[in-house]
Length: 321
Image (cartoon, rainbow, N blue to C red; front, side, top):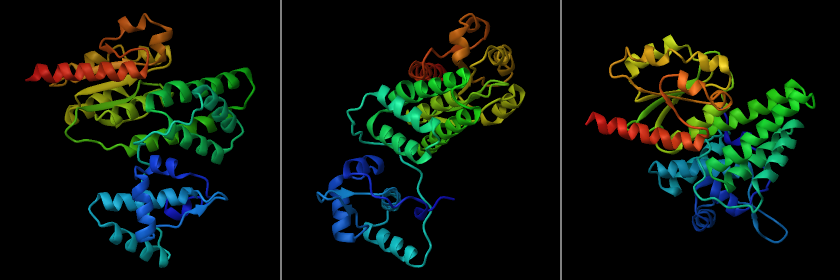
């Protein structure tokens, strides 16, 4: 469990970035500081406000209490009372950015910076860069223009022998952790179309699938992400009583893609049978696999995939009326 005290108290964020990270308007934040003393930000030499990661976590916690119906004055009293007794509240998961603040830095420059931080195992620096990226770009740009190229460069560096496998694992684990946090920050809407998503049997490369899960949740779908190496029999059995509207499996390797050949046949036993969609790098490098796997190929990019999923489910629901 991560509490507010676990975050760094080093002042480094200006008010624009903090507002982007918390969803609190600048005028509201200033009022909370002035009227309710929610916190006292550090001041730079030119008297501009500077906030720490702990300040951001505090503000997220307070906003979460206010959004749940508690008056701001009561939320601040509760916070201060807890902290006086040495009980630090549990941190609220990072909320998706609501107001982007473009940094003016091109995505390819972030790729170089992020790559360097990851291959030198500078976790704190990588976290700061990722935070800046989230504040400056939408999800599609983050995934397609920054994270994917960074991971490709890291994979190539490992293949050439320029970095160790431990470094490749560190980088993948870091990105996966950030992606899971983003996924969990979006609400799971009970009334929305229900999608079960994961990786094909024997498939261990899950970051592409996880990116898709984040995008689908951000688009308002109810998504359950199941991770790598999903046994088909178990998935079909699970679907027989959970009744998803759609099942999506991804594969980056040919053998994993071939494991999907009988998925549509297995799903035909379900009533009603969910829509089956598939995608991943295996179908781009080996295009003939698209015709061998029965179901709907979702496209060559995650952006195209989300669009096709929306179209498929809209048609499915219209056909059920």
